[in-house]
Image 1 (cartoon, one colour):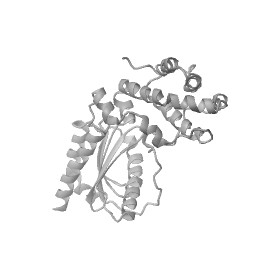
Image 2 (tube, one colour):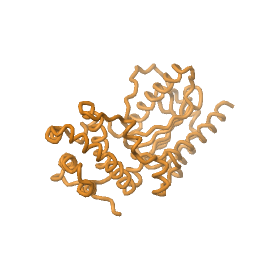
Image 3 (spheres, one colour):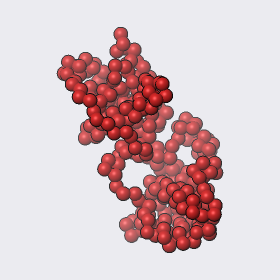
Image 4 (tube, rainbow, N blue to C red):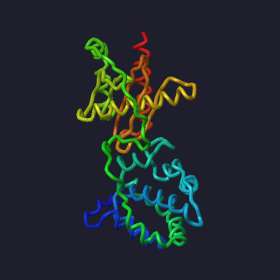
Length: 290
């Protein structure tokens, strides 16, 4: 099955959204409309209708919840087996699928949309006024200031403590540049970084230099948020965290003394980048401790 091309400007997502609402009672027409959009646009539609059903049903007779919708969907591992997914069972995410295997993502998201279609029909039967009112809302969310690495959930903002990184300190870690570049050239990452908790770069390897400071600032906030949660749970050290952002997967691991190894990739699978950071981070931590 070929990947659908993006919609032309004259046939916007909002138009398709309105048509999908009208076709909620017809599985065939609903499916034909879904085939007009590409993987990224399908994901936007799925997120829109997911929220639409949950939020608008709270004023309808039949109220829906996120957990109820999730219970209707095919388990990730089962879908992966059926689709012969290359990602380890249970680890595949729709965002990653959209980036690295859009044709598979189209099949997967279309299935999700057909699963929630009866819920949409029930909602519209109970609240027919939504057919007209929904035309005033948009599928596409307002543009974010930093969309490429904006997380799904906001991170805690805090003031950075003053930190002086000397040339001597950077030179101490220069011997690890070869390892960082191997993460780029051999493992397929876009960024490999040795950084401090405050976001200062000690050494790095990257294919996109213009993104470096944006990434390290964001990683500093993520490290702070995770360690603060750990302190609240009486577990202070951050070991390894792998998180999916809108357009990349990020893995970071503490190597001791307030230093972190960070890897970023748009295409490397989450489980693979996680295991890579765990392995190299552990090696670094042991070597630095000597």
